[in-house]
Image (cartoon, rainbow, N blue to C red; front, top):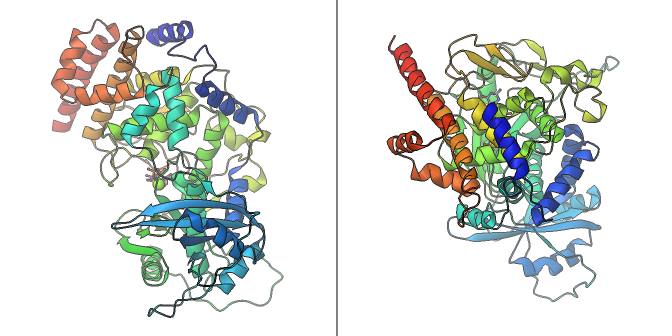
Length: 562
Ligand code: GTP
Ligand code: MG
């Protein structure tokens, strides 16, 4: 704690590591972020409704290249006015496919465009209709319109590590690095639109059977923590919740009786076949049914997305809404979460394959919990206390129990958030995060976002993060002791690295910042060389924690042997 205070004084005195004194591009971004925070809050539901409606008004057309824009628009304006057009590309094994997304002003525009679409007669194809089309060349040259709005070219590609290093090399402070990382890697407009259009394609294909079904994106595609190439998590919801007592006409239906897990699996099998055999663009379908939550994985070649579909309950969407609400509370939440997730990926703490390691989702909960602990964002209990009737979120959990996990979803109505004013810079928050978890007793304590406090672990799992919506579950149940230890050591190394980098601020070469944090880890990959470096350091912080680390690792080993 003393070191934190010392550092925060240091940052405030030293402009380079905190906010810059001159008005840089970054400060403009910073100000935008602050302004966004004072803007009125748009709820998750409002975003979902707007994006789904926008997707219904949109079509995606494969084109020869971006020069086809005028020709395509001249043709499509016959169906209705157009609001926006976006260009994007998808790299497949041997080729780069090019597409234009057209958003019509009204739903009649996209409906007419699809109704007028035609299937190729040259190939032996299944005549499936969807909002994914391609633009045929026209032999007769029609007159092109000149009043066409320019095409939005929004890069959908994630910058490489090299490109990010270049971007960071011009920044003035560590906090600026964090904002730049967030701005350059966050999911953009085209990425978000593609996710909703892909969800709608699947929904449309199942509507004939389940008239009121919904296929909803969840996870990082929608919770504000998505980066440009994140996967698309989808939930298929039957959504028959009408309760019209007055209706006397009842549908004949099949029963969903008995062991629902087996039924769920069979239904997913059928959906997987529809995706694989009927839906244009969808390929490489895999069925992962042994997991706690069975999922179908597939690749969408026309939107370039890796997709996961599940169909158990809506808790994933509710979780996304909760994370979205926390993210919207303070502008620093997103840059901080992005930094921690980026750092963890670069040092191989997280892994794209499922397994015993920590995931992006768990890291996000760790960051959010720490911000609650610092009283920067509200706890879930505070949000739940203020919930309205319409905020109720009832779902049936895996044990067929009804759960209401509702919380206030409109931050404009939150009267007493029970937070405290805090002006920490992003770097200060990052350092405090690393420091907090490097001294955290993972053996005894669980993390609860409900109360924002530590609670004793109910069972011995190496890492225990209470599932905020299903309180009896640990979201980090799969994390092994080894990975938990590794994570804590890395938190400690990162805190140490940040502390040391302060001393090099006045040097000629840039020995601080996000790239430096990651490169130092790579240079010190070998644990022994790191320990020697740490022993050689004069920092009391490092020495103190080096010894607690050795003691705790020993005691963990002893426990494991017992
Ligand atoms: P990235 O895909 O890595 O960008 O992040 P993500 O948040 O989308 O994570 P992931 O695709 O692994 O999971 C999607 C969503 O499923 C998460 O955002 C959570 O809402 C939910 N989720 C993931 N893991 C768990 C878990 O262990 N328990 C529960 N209850 N929900 C989970
Ligand atoms: Mg995901």
